Length: 233
Image 1 (cartoon, rainbow, N blue to C red):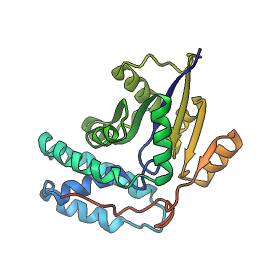
Image 2 (cartoon, rainbow, N blue to C red; image 1 turned 45 degrees about the vertical axis):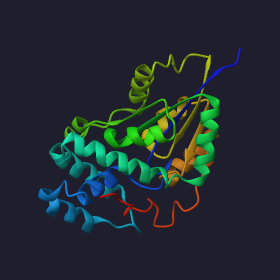
Image 3 (spheres, rainbow, N blue to C red; image 1 turned 180 degrees about the vertical axis):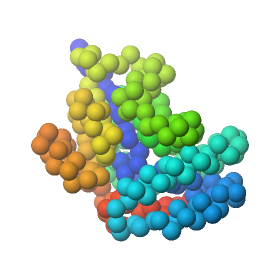
Image 4 (cartoon, rainbow, N blue to C red; image 1 turned 60 degrees about the vertical axis):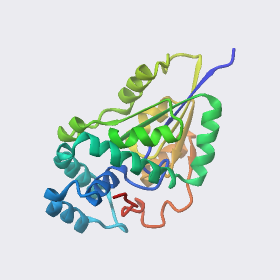
C-alpha cells in the first residue's frame, strides 16, 4: 500500500530570509498601530546589528512583541497580517518554491512556527498548507515557546489528519533551520536542514546524514539574515 505523505515547514530562514516576529512588529508600526510604543521600538532598532550575532536581538524582539501585541485591535491585526502574508509570499526562496511544489504533489502540508499565529496562518494559506500554527498573544505575553512536537500534534488534530510519528503508514518530510526544529527533524523520514542557524547544527545534521539545503542569498546580510525586512503600512 502506498504510504501517506506529510510535509512540515518552519518559516523563518526556512521558507524566506527573515524573522517573522520582527516583521510583524515593523508592519504594525508602519500602520500607525503602535504609536504609544515608539520609544521601545526605537530602542529595538538601535540594537540591530545585521553583521553580528543576532540571537540576543531576536530574543529582545520577542519581549517587545509580548509587551505590545495586546494593544492592537484584532481586526487591525488581521488586516495587516493578510497584507504581510502577501509580501512574505513574494520573498520565498526560489529553492524552497520547488520544495513547496513537490510537497503539494506528495500530500498534506503543515506550517509550524514560533512567529505570531495571526501572521503565520494567512501566509501558510498562500502555499496551500492544510493547517498552520504559530504562537498566540498569550504565548508571547507569558514568554512561552511551545515545543514544536506539541504544535505538530495540535496542527494534525485541528486539520483532521490521522497522523502519528509511530504510524508506519506515514512518511514525513520536515524542513527546519534551528535547534527548536531538531525534535521534528529527528523523527522525520526525510529531514531537511535549511540554512542551518549555527555551525554546530550544520555539523550535527551532517553527522546524522540529513539533507542540507543552503538557499541563495541567505548570508547576504550577515549570518542571521536580513533583519530590516519589507513592511506594509
